[in-house]
Length: 293
Image (cartoon, rainbow, N blue to C red; front, side, top):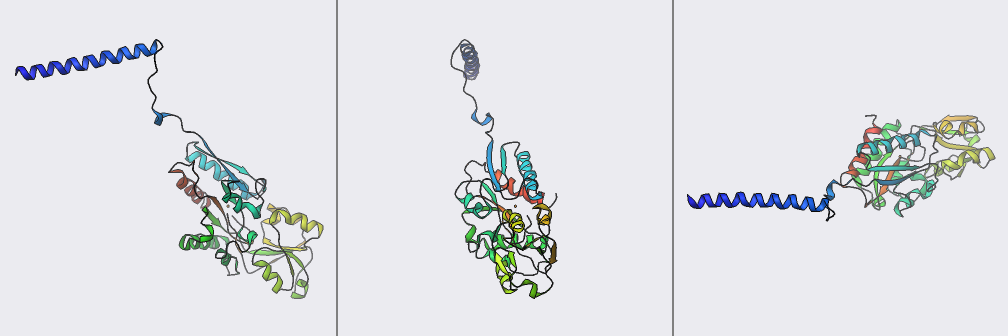
């Protein structure tokens, strides 16, 4: 019993001594001693800024959608991830956008598969006139294809999403009613659509959307293959007088609807500064935004 009593007494004295030393240490610190070390885990997280290169102009719905997506990312990460939008190809022109991401010029990029013909041999199959009934169906097919086959041609980036546009049209400065009207017609076309123009007797002229308005105005091209939204979004309706609905559609790559392919966004494969949970948030945010949820 005496032994137990002694042990209890020693424990009480040890605790009392510890408290006394702690109080003394605090007082010493207050008098100019070394401050108590802080917990690094409680330090405010540093904001991560990512650059997003998109070739659509700021006024276009595609760019506005990208801005909403960026805001959603910032919201879901509690401000830890901020995405800066560089619209209108100011950071990288549309044809150089993918390589710009690979080489670190931008962290995220949006472009079109058809602007770099031969670079994505498997995905070019999406550009064939397969009879997609609408943009939603083409979007699902493109994303499922990428998820299933994991194309090696995309191995140096991380794909965030692909999407498509609605059925294409032939927008022209003069009426096109017959194949005879197509002969020699200079048509803006990209990707595999150039072969379609050739087979119809026209003369394909490859160029990205940002160059098309001026080309139509100056007569460099007399017509363009495009989705109908370009007449408003790219103001090409000011430069053409006729359009003919076509029973085909092609596809784009990197962030939503255009004529030569599914668009989507690609990010650098290993963004070193992203926290472990944030890449998933980025993909989920687009998925929800794209589905209207």
